[in-house]
Amino acid sequence: MDDKRIVPPLEGDERSVLAAFLQYHRETLAMKCAGLTPEQLKRRSVPPSSMSLLGLVRHMAEVERIWFRIRLSGEDIPLRWKRRPGDDIDFEVDAADPDEAFAAWNEECARSRDIVAAAESLDVTGRDGDWSFSLRWILAHLIEEYARHNGHADLLRESIDGSTGE
Image (cartoon, rainbow, N blue to C red; front, side, top):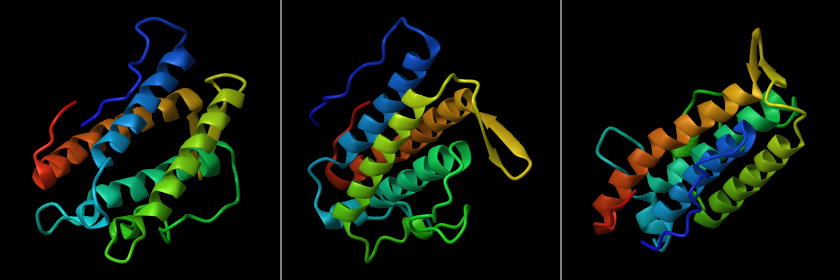
């Protein structure tokens, strides 16, 4: 696997370090998916799991949309694939179009980066019902979400073609 990721800085202000770590994890997921056929991207892990690399891409597009656009920015937009947060429709990939999924994910990541860059501070908050979340918390949560799923992606990729790596 060709590793073109940009390593996060060892020093810097909090926003730039958090944003860089999040971007590093986005690049990791892209790297795990690079060079695979649509069939390989759709290959599921072990039953009964519905997890696949394409499902992870769709899931992370939805996660970016929910946390940055809907919860933090308060945009009144529909979910892309899910009927509601918590269902697993984003992992149903048999009829999914990989090009559409990657375009959606890239669009959501770009929009998220714009929202983070435009935020007055890491203390700005978004809402979900009675819950309030700071941008700082959301960035940390997204790093955690990507890190966990990148572990899954590593195992999925290894099972497809033997490729391993960080």
